[in-house]
Length: 547
Image (cartoon, rainbow, N blue to C red; front, side, top):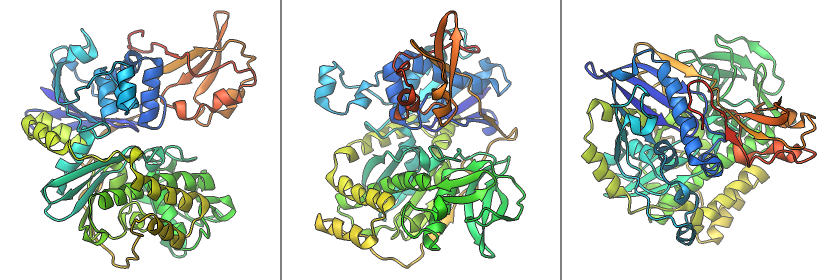
């Protein structure tokens, strides 16, 4: 018999097949992107509200089925699945009410007739989620509990699967991703918040960006006066990339692995080097508007600004946690970093530009804690009652950053710093003028410990399978379309195609490539307003039921 650990990440899904008898990993399957359009949870939420939650749920379960097919075992042999993720992903997976997550205000929820939505631990039969005759009919599906409106089971996982929960000293833990969940521990008190960092932290929304996967630049270091890239190999291990002049693009020495793109940690590393070596004189401006890291791999001024917004959101959230909890900066002893970005980033380079508090005394890096907690639940290493008890304990002390003045003031400085070149002195002057402590100058290098070399430390004896094409198409009828195909040329992800069919013209979007409601460049460029990205519907594909 087998079990499945499933992490529903905002940037992609990770699934691991487990041998229940041997209590060991067999194989890991991951997608390169989330199957729903968009690069963040708000896009996914907006899509589900607009198109219909049933449709969003079917797209997600279709994707999970596609991942299960890659295991090449009879699905009847899977007896237990544990699912971890943030509240939006878990709600879409369960096909339960999501509008309360879109409208945080109680008055709006009341007008919409939305009551309290319970997002605690839930246990289903496979047929409840995947339907009858799915092969998973009698499988037990355990959905781990969310803690608060924007703090899900993935945040619970980062606390449980690191040393954070057992620390007596002041500690912060952060799951670095598009929706960076974090928590501060002061004695027995745990305070949580979530910073909407955006997709650039994981390499999306960057011109040459990609998720952490084979061929991705994950780090950059100075070597013999040039820059040496580190590139992930087929087993997700760091390998030697090209030695390159980042200003001219001249490759001084070919590396062992060819880079196909750059992930978020690579962007952070390159940005840190460029700032601290003086290559960047004023943010966000690069020399000649470009930083070259390989053949057809480069960063632009726009990429720097985009990455800066994400780093700024995380730094502002860290400072807000400390200030609102009455903790002095110098009292922070431990910083725990989890998730793919938390694993692969050079912690010292990240610290220098604000990804981790510059005054941290100790930094400890972990891997994918969400998948690890789901794995523990499947294998019976963790009692469900313990998880529920911890979730209840944490629920009461949460900071909603969107309505917090401390966060707003700090993030205003971050935006000015990263996108307008605000100097550090002015940054601190603005904070102090609002009664907030400025950033201290710290020269002490913290102790840095990296617990794992890969975000998924054990992929199983059958290794890792990556699914790049999720084969889901969504479409809308394009009344009045002239077939000029300007929308196709404008789309940054090449996700849209104009398709004449049965006397009508449709625009078809490849769902996992489409950037969703936060983009809509196709809508803006259409000269006759033939598309609106409102009347869209998913098309059935493969073995997915028609929706």
